[in-house]
Image 1 (cartoon, rainbow, N blue to C red):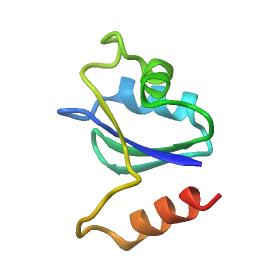
Image 2 (cartoon, rainbow, N blue to C red; image 1 turned 180 degrees about the vertical axis):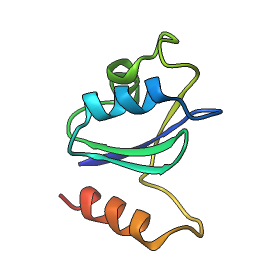
Image 3 (cartoon, rainbow, N blue to C red; image 1 turned 45 degrees about the horizontal axis):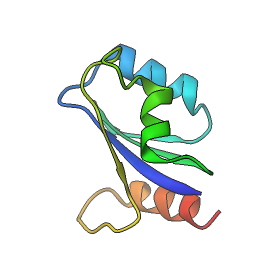
Image 4 (spheres, rainbow, N blue to C red; image 1 turned 135 degrees about the vertical axis):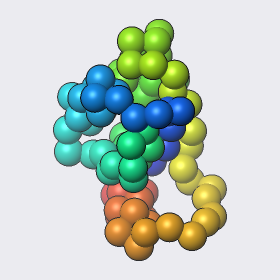
Length: 86
């Protein structure tokens, strides 16, 4: 599976609900407005379209999460690593 980060300038209930609906078993909420989703066979553009890329849920960036580095919560890294290996 490929992991993508979905980043919004601020959190919203509409964005969170759209992600839960589009990826019910394959999302990880980092914090308000920041999510990871795991998908198979979709591009970043297609992930954005499933969430709402025409402004329905506000501004979003969809970025591949395969080349990453940083210091963050261990459960986030474990979630992303497990999905990327699936």
